[in-house]
Length: 317
Image (cartoon, rainbow, N blue to C red; front, side, top):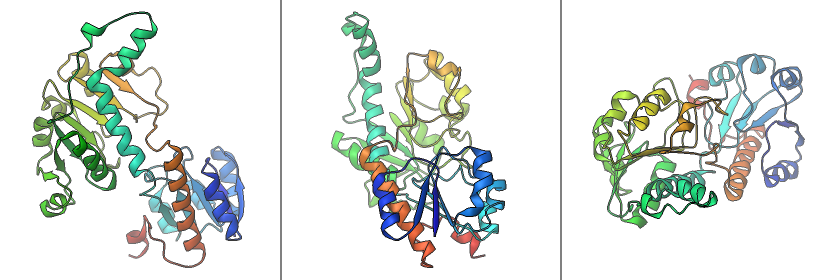
């Protein structure tokens, strides 16, 4: 079986594929080159850089499975893959710890003005009096999305004695209580109650600009919002307005509607902390994401049912 890997994944994942006798090619291809070459391969493994569009899938004469070494599959045309009988698999557990830790890191950074303190110190300025922060201890963390990453974030936040509330229409009150999360039925209520709001949900048609001007206006003026999930969930224009007018205390974004962002007005604001989509970018997270994805691809090519089969419902209709 021939496998094409078009985004860098952990060496451990490549070795796992080769141990199973797979013929593995790693090459970062742009759209046209991938379109021309995809017909030669039985499997394709990507991360977030490669966009697996409908024309690429339709040109994939032998493709049986597309593996995403990570959780988000918004860069893959799921419907077209399903129509062509191509399984899409991912690694939803690979980056759980890495993303949750980054969310907590952003909370701490915002609370203690770490990026401003670092920048001013390196400019030779001693701004101690201007940089009084706040503690996480005793504050309320609102989770929008309470899947694997949201629950891990809650677990870590409990070390700071934070109260955890969560909005997730797909999970029951009893489901969330198992993880010490109080279920909030209405998103606007969570937005008004939380001191920190952390997003942990996919970007879909339903969640596009879920955090809009109305939702942001519901936040406390002392509250912070953190997005380590996907760009497009927050309306960036609306976020700019509330940050500029200091209607909320601050925001931290690891993801953006357009990546990499160009001339984004948010970057002119001192109360925004930005990172370049680092959520899954840890050594440990990349090894887990790569190897879990490789395992799913191997299972599929062997005719077995993968554990993390994204488009199962679409293909079993």
